[in-house]
Image (cartoon, rainbow, N blue to C red; front, side):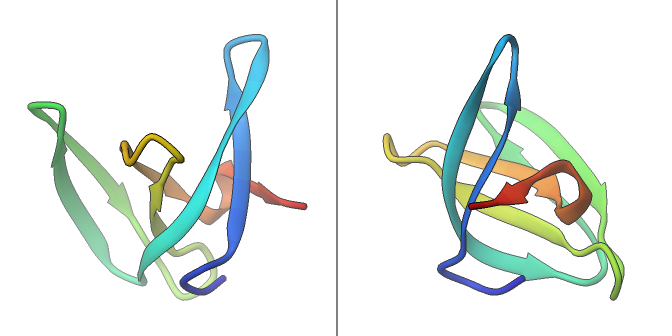
Length: 68
């Protein structure tokens, strides 16, 4: 997975999508909308910072998303 990759993930009964803007192969903590979000990225399952079309940032593991 690399920067610029378009991804999607399950959100409620539908899907959300966005573009990968950061890839982290170590533990990362981001504050998004005033909440601290943490993911433990690894070489095999990196943490991804994803930007949605509305510029909202999301933090997911690669295993939590799919590509088109």
